[in-house]
View 1: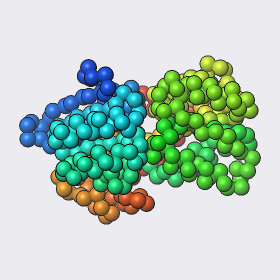
View 2 (view 1 turned 30 degrees about the vertical axis):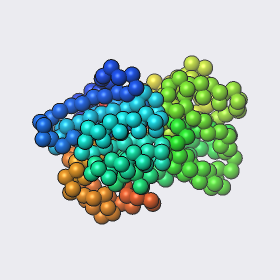
View 3 (view 1 turned 30 degrees about the horizontal axis):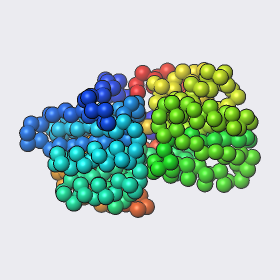
View 4 (view 1 turned 180 degrees about the vertical axis):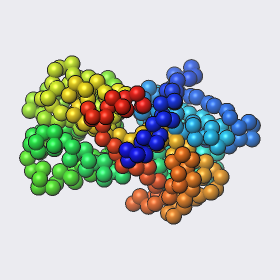
Amino acid sequence: MKKILMTCASVGVALSMLAACGSDTSSQSEEVSTGGNEAVTHAMVFKNTGNPYGEKMMEGFEEAIQEVGGDVILRSPDQPTAEGQIQIIEQLITQQVDSITIAGNDEDALQPVLKKAMDQGIKVLSVDSAVNAGSRMVHVNQANPESIGRTLIEATADMIDFEGEIAVLSATSQAANQNIWIEYMQKELEDPIYENIELVKIAYGDDLRDKSTSETEALLLQYPDLKAIISPTTVGIAAAGKVLTDKGLSGEIALTGLGLPSEMATYIENGVTPAMFLWNPIDVGYAAGMTAHALAEEEILGEVGDSYEAGKLGEKEITEDGEGTEVLIGDPFRFDVNNIEEWKEVY
């Protein structure tokens, strides 16, 4: 995985954060035309505006579509709700885009509007946070969910010497990716080697900085003997890192999860976060863009065994994901004091 990330690092350094555009108070909109009036139009809808991880994914998506000569529409609701995404998708259907890539805020609630899009010939895929199999043709998955869940528990156990109370600070309670990672965390905790570790609470910060901060503070008040917090969301882990730093709890409560190196460098360097994990969100967005292009060109149908060229990421193959189909990008990568200096300038 390190080799994969290093390959894309030089590209990631050169990319800059997408700026929020448009005066619409309900959503973010950025449209980039690259192929003229006859170009294929690909839309990506992320969970909410102001999310650094989502902005990096959009960078990768835009890069891929520009490479293949398509037009790009990037949209996100202000709040991470299904209702906000439904409104945007209805607009995209009216615009007659060729593909919609969605990071779902709710696994099931988006099905009617996404099915409507597919019935009108629009290619629909999900990325990062999956929608159910009836709502999309394929899911672009950043890493194996079981590997993510088990890795986070293994790392946490090492940090607290396999003993003590731990809590999870998640995004929204409806986020499919968060829920399956937590499910695998709980399964890993069933192993007898973790018998002295207790998961006392799963809190939800809704991928909002302020709410994630208040939820972290509530965990500290409710569980004075808490030994670790796992936050599998870039917004949540950064908020928790600031709270623990401000309260001088480095070395007392360990923090780990999934974070952006650029945001988490301070908390890794000051000891609040001994280690954390992630993949390159630029690559995830890029893979989604290449997959959307392959679907729109009917190079693939989203079926098991389909394969296609995903630009700089090489050939990708579609596999079964339990309910539908997916494309896997790679395994989570560990960031700690030994490599954070290298990666904090990348993304």
